[in-house]
Image (tube, rainbow, N blue to C red; front, top):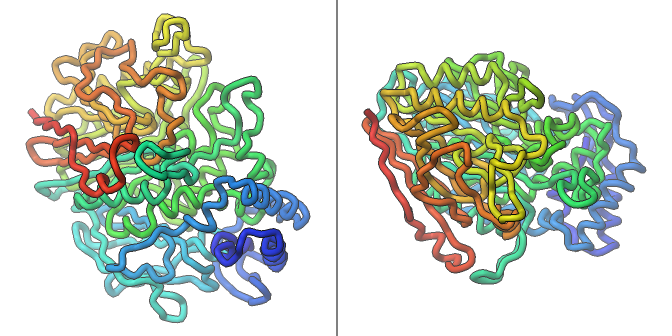
Amino acid sequence: MIVSLARHMEDFELDSTNLHAMVRLIHTVDLTSSPRTGTMGGTPFTGRYFMARGPLVDRRKFLAGSAGAMSAAFFGGGPLDALTSRIAPRQSQVWDAGQVRHLLPTVSESRILLKVSFEEALLAAPTLRVGARSFPGRMNDTSGRFWQFYATDLDAGATHSLSLVAANGSSLCEPWTLSTFPPADARPERFRLLFFTCAGGPEGTYTGIGQRRGNLPTAIRNRLLRRALSFNPDAAVANGDHIYWDLHRWSGQRTGALSPRAETSNFDFSGSVFGTSNEAALMLAAEPQIVPVYGTNFRSTPVFFLQDDHDHWENDAAGAFPIAWFQLQLARATQQLYYPEFLPEANRPLGLPWSASSDRGYLSESFGTIRYGSLAEVLLYDVRRTMTLGPQAVFVDPTVEEWLLARTTSPGVRHVVHAPSNPMGWSAGKWGEWYPDVLDRAVGALTTAVPKPYWQDGWLSQHDRLVDAMSGMRARTPLVVSGDLHAIGAGTMQRSGTLNLASNPVTTVLSGPVGTSEGGFPSAVRGVGSSPSGHLDLVETVPPIEQHGFTLVDFLPDRMVVSLFRWDVNSQPLEAIDGLEPFYTTELSTP
């Protein structure tokens, strides 16, 4: 197994003597153990855990690669040093996190799935207790620090008491509560859903108003999310870009070459992720971007994580997608370790791509449903995992499109909302968008008059089929809340190509980024901000604002209420986060 490097690093001062001590610690780890037995520092353990079949790590390669890369990152002041000082946010004294480092739950009407990491590796399986019932943990890494818990056959619409217990019976953290969703035929009066995007990114710095470098510090991202949680949402959607660690350059003369971050991580692209040096390299890159952002703050708020381009360890530049096999495995491993997959739902086919039943339970990696009684259904879809090129190009697999169209037109639920990982309504001129808009450098604006290199017409055709179905919901008001775009905005789509949507326009919302760097906003990348696609007639009620924020949507039987929040790092103090109120609210009445 691979030792829990992140935890042990906290005990080291970053000098050469102790780096060598850390390397000696790596030497003590026995990576040749069977999947059910092993040693850590000479101590035997038994347990059931996953280890990918593949070549075991070579010690010299591990030390020359991962340890050398870690040394370079540490002494070069690289973002990996976040593991030593920023990895665990301070938790509220009201709730004792105990040995838990981070905890992210998701739920359906009868199931709970938890992803949990612990301060120390656990040598035997812990247990999740839900009321009087017990559910054994399943190890998700090869060291025993990451576990998942899958509880089934629970009462719907109930508040459940949860606790995590070690194999010896001791408590691993204070008990807490988590509610399952109401059954599909229930008629709740209200449902509040939080949306945000782009919470990832290596640790940045902030020294005062307008004085920051890189991504927002994780403590500030956590503070924004805690403000969002103060409004007591029933669930949350984290829509893409949970990490930024692209492995290839996507612009300039060296396009396609390994990025500096890839060289630091020194991945073995021909090796397995788990059970090799790749596992430690993944954790060193991803953990500082996820664990301190969420901690245990979402323990009582179900969260639904969609992946997007950067979650596949790449930018959505031409040539990067469909994603390479190794980076696909990194994306899957990151999800397995840190945040929950999607639980099954009665109206979502079991055979959709990247959906399967295994010893980890029935889970979908890319397509999810939030069903809250008969009041609301939110359709969650990752457009990167199944995107194709060529004359039949699509963003989502045809079977996924069939599911989306079927649910959009089906009766029995008051509100149906689409939540794709790629924004509808606006273009930033990027390659991997629904739209053909591209930057015309001569005039400094986006245009559809110039062909976008390598862009695929089929992506837009699929977009139009989806929005046509949304607008066709005569008994509902169509709403799309998207991720990916680093901005907050809202508008109504009146036309898409030859489709006249004016009789039931599609309201589209940019949910707001949580961690974007100063160089990550569209205007910084291309010199122009996001704008409505030339393929559309879009009435902008809130033109895209390049600030940090989030969105709340309240579902009621007769309407939806959309509230946008923003915080301006360049003009507002940190304390303003704690008092954020909506700067824009709109009510969408239903017919």
